[in-house]
Amino acid sequence: MKEKWWHNKVAYQIYPKSFNDSNGDGIGDIRGIIEKLDYLEELGIDLLWLSPIYCSPLADQGYDISDYYNIDPRFGTIEDLEELIAEGKKRKIGIVMDLVVNHCSDEHEWFKKACEDPDGPFGKFFYIKDYKDGDELPCNWRSYFGGPCWDFLPGHDDKVYLHVFHKKQPDLNWENPLLRKEIYKMINWWLDKGIAGFRIDAIINIKKKLPFSNYPADRGDGLSSINNMLKEASGIGEFLNEMADECFRKHDSFTVGEVFNEKDSELPLFIGDNGYFSTMFDFSTTFIDETDTATIEPVDNLAEKYKKAFFKSHKRVEGIGLLSNIIENHDEPRGVSRYIPKEDLTDKSKKMLAGLYFLMPGIPFIYQGQEIGMENLSGVKSLKELDDCANPDLYTRAVEDGLSEEDALKYIARWTRDNARTPFQWSDEKNAGFSEGEPWLMLNPNYKEINLAKQKDDSNSVFSFYKKLIALRKNPEYAEAIVYGEFEPYLAEQKNLMSFKRIDGKTVLIAANYQKEAQTVALDRPIKSVLLSNTEEINYDGESLRLNGYDFIVAELRNCS
Image (cartoon, rainbow, N blue to C red):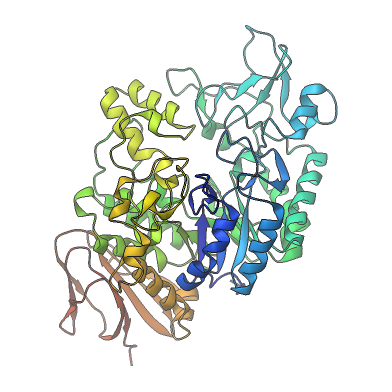
């Protein structure tokens, strides 16, 4: 694996609407991000990924783009963004934009022109089919947000268009070379502005299995999961390689793909030395607690499932490229509420989880608020309190699967994407210090206890622990081992122990007791020094470590003579 400029970076994701509001309208904005650049520099951030800030009607919170070349006035202006790019560079922070090109908004000029003339050039930018009311739809794929992925083309009762997400997000037809040319033109326009690169949204969806056909229904609605089609779609590499050639490789830009369903044989093509992307997110742990039917019961053996998924995914890519590691993002619940049993959720266990994912091979991404241990919402009493467009389908599914209305609401409260989208908790003051105005989404009621102001100067806080993790990763004495070192699982069969080594000249052991009961870790060589821990009580007798509940330790081991 060739060394690349982005391998040693630490990335941070901002959900702009909820980060920091500079003008009191209850919505976060670009100037609010500029105000907090010094904070991000202090934390140690190198790359700053912004969820979409382009013009959008916000049917799916900005992932429905109506103008790829402009900034939504809610967030500011193109001049504000240019200032953010410039101010970021002063602090050695590169700005990473969100690239959403599987679909656009139905308010985009392309789609408007397609509606005016479905048989014209812009009609071929989309998937538009003839249809008469009562006919069978072109296929029975289910939209990610529920219901058929076909809808009547506005202004036409004899045609339908494809949308695998929200109906206001028509899919772009990547089979059309003219469409691809327009997309590459836009990508290069942004790269020429000086951004560091892109996070690439839902990119695996750009290749459809054609011609359209039905798949076996997998729910009572008679529809089929879009994933059944994606498993059979082939040839996406032609599109991705062309995009990399036309855009990313020319600029030596950083790109991180949101990729699912890739085959082992395709990994070098996706993230190898000359891959389509610099890296792609590791979603291996994202599915360990998902079940076939809606339930509010905790998952058994969570720690073991987490360990096995993480170890398997990183062994799978070893020597090929680096994954990007996460415990949460804007589409997932808060990681600490997901991967730590509710009764064990403390600052100590939050630090353990942080240390584990952060020191695995790969590029660590921190999602806003994660560094202070923000948790899932509590006290949700009604769907009306929430915002996410996916909530109604989640609720319907829960009821269909047999949950009571009360339990269905608990299910929503656990899984809604709103958990990650509540305003950042800067302080215990009005609106958590996020805005002088009424926030666009409910605050998490725990902001009085969990906030940055309370943690910033506390050396034992979750925030301070993240700073120490970043400092360790960048420490020249250990950077080679942590960034490029061999990954070797250690005592992988010991239950609820998640331990591994990073080896490159030095041998660094990372060990965590992923349970509340104490356990002992036998060592194959003595500890030379303890580099980081979430406890002051280090129980080491020369041959073994005794770890109390949720203890986490990073230690340099003595090399064998």
